[in-house]
Length: 159
Image (cartoon, rainbow, N blue to C red):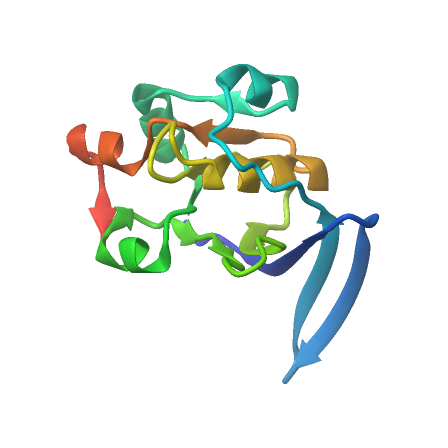
């Protein structure tokens, strides 16, 4: 099954959403600006639920994986490069200002999207999930146990 992704840069500012398109050799890239709030401490699961984010266990994340959900790794690039959930796309943050993230999202806003990072002490995947949910995607999941739990369960990974 071939997955079609829409390249997407989400610029996270305090203004309303804006859409700009740029064409590079026949290929369009879209720049989306949506509100974003920096989460200085790890979020509580209740906060995620209030924002419409579905929290999943390792067993539930594995089931979503087998069903073809898109996975997004919000860990540092060096850690992503060392290994990640097989097929997962990186979530790239502007570490200097925490103002934007880059995502390759599917065109269908009903596609299941699973975000993970280091576990409950890490807010990166939560922040990316909330921004994506607020952008209009319907099936956004937060795998709060993180990559180490995925590894421990011996689920598919790649480098």
